[in-house]
Length: 160
Image (tube, rainbow, N blue to C red; front, side, top):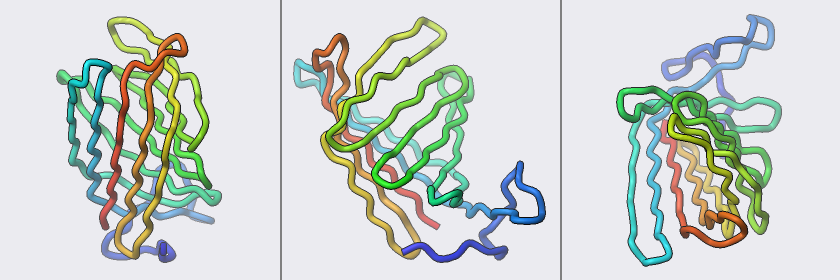
């Protein structure tokens, strides 16, 4: 379970919140592991290990982190509220991906090379909360024009 966030050795103020009602973010070690298997069966695995900020706002858990691809940075926001996870990327890649078990959402995926519209059909979304970490696992299918393109799994681990 989550403990109440308070100022301390692992807490930093989150920009944009005034002193009154100020929310504190906890520094976390964030590990994202993604697996994609295309229609030919070829599997691609990616992993990102970075420092992030985790805080709670309006019943949501929010994780902010940055990643760099080809020397260009992208700011990312993960927001977990109830049974819905949203991943927003802003930078060289721009997208808003929504994951909810049993549902499919359309997403525009914009890169410097062009924009693609993809469907994201979530097969499973599980969340494990412990005192010092949270782990989220998502199994989903990327679709294009209603047809499956690849089967994916994303594991997100945030450790205090």
